[in-house]
Image (cartoon, rainbow, N blue to C red; front, side):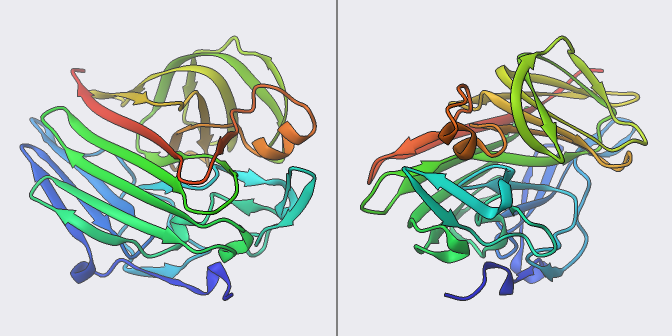
Length: 300
C-alpha cells in the first residue's frame, strides 16, 4: 500500500468547481482533499472573504495551505504517536511527516469524485480502501456543499464498508477570517502539545484571535456559535448530528479555526483508558454517521 502522503493535491482552475447563489460564491477543489478553497459574499461595502482563501494550485498532501474548509474523516485532529488502541489491539497509523502523530484523517489528503454539480450545489464522494494510511477499515464518504440565501451548508455522511466494527469520527475544519467567536460549551479539556488529557469545567464563552498561538478542546457544546468581524455582518454557525465537540485554534493571528467534531482529540485512545465523554462513535458494517454544518450571514 503506498503512503497516504505520496499524493499531490491538485487545485488547478480547470479541476475546480465554482458555485454561485445570489451574493455568495464558493470554489471547490475535489482533487485537493474535497476542499472548499474560498467562500465570499458581496456586501454593500465590498466583497467579504469569510474564509482565508487558498490560491495555491497544488501542494504535497502533507503540507496543505492553511485556508478554506476541509472534511475530517474518519477521525478528527490527532491520534497520539500514530497508535490507535482499539479492542485490545494497537494499530499503527501513518503519521503526518515531521510529527509523531496521525492527524486529521485520510479524507483531506485524497482526491474526491464529483457525482453531482449544479449552479449552487455539488456532491463529492470518496472511497477509502482498507489499510491506506494504516487505517485497516474500508469506508465511503459523501460530502454535499450548497449555497443558499443565508450562506453555506456542508453535509458529511460516512459508511463503514468493512466486515467489522470501526471506530469513527467526523469533523469540519474551517479557517475563518473572523476576529472572535462566542459560544456555550460546558466542558473543556486540559491538553499538552494539542493532545487532550482530561475534562474540566469550562467558564469561558468568548475567544478572540490574537498574535499568540492557542488551542482549545471543548465538549458538551450545543451546536451553535457566532463569529464576529471588526465591522459589518458576522456568521452564525450551527450544526445537526452528533457534532457536540469543538476545536478552536489560532495560529499567530493568521486565522481563527472553529471546528465542529463528533469527538475530542485522540478520542479512541482516551476511551481505551476508560476516560468518559470522548465522543468516539462505533459503526457496525454498513452503518452510517451523518452530520451537517451551516454558516448563515447575520446582520452586523
